[in-house]
Length: 112
Image (cartoon, rainbow, N blue to C red; front, side, top):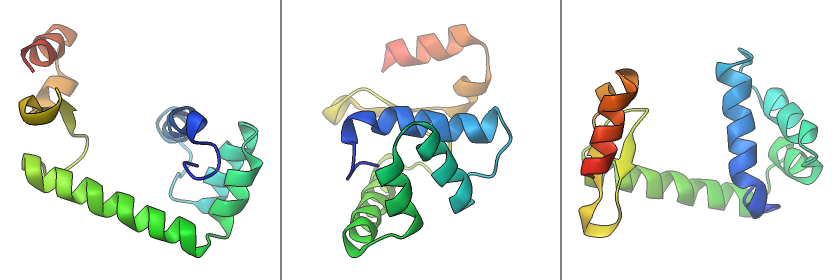
């Protein structure tokens, strides 16, 4: 997605999450991802996902390594993990805040 239409990446990721958590579809299935991308009019991304080339595989590996490094940096060990703030002030918001009352999450984010 990022390599074909980066300006629509967030939209695609949102649709993939919705397919999983709202529609109950298996987003571990390449056909499901392809269907979601095609449904968004992102046929080039769907084709590339179905038959990944060296550039896509390299980009994916790099993203995973970057995410893992960030998880280690923050001492995070699972998902969901929410990092609030920027630079030296960034910190992990406890996942319990994500599942509790909205006011607790808002307070945790404001404290970041």
